[in-house]
Image (cartoon, rainbow, N blue to C red; front, top):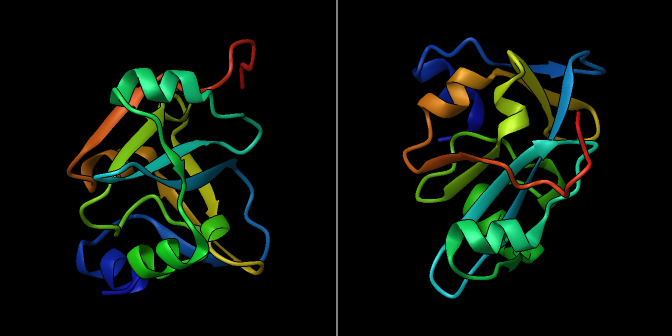
Length: 138
């Protein structure tokens, strides 16, 4: 099931927008451990603190290859959506939770505008946690 079908099938308020979409920009990045995949969602201007990620997961992560990202999500690494990726643990930075809606790029010409509540509701294994480098307040 593609993202558009996921949105329609679940009657989400999220929408795929062509061109520039104003709002809180976020980035989704896929990482792997020896046993699982982890999607990390942070504000675009934030840097992930991998020591915090390791503390949360109890193990280190490494970036997923482009091939792994495409195979698991159907999207390239820099264009991952925060929903419709089954079996992947999601770490949502707590600063994202403070936003009503975020915008995630899906390609160079389209973005996903999605309420944070839908990210939380439509991911089975999601943890809200502080995972950005200290001193970055967005």
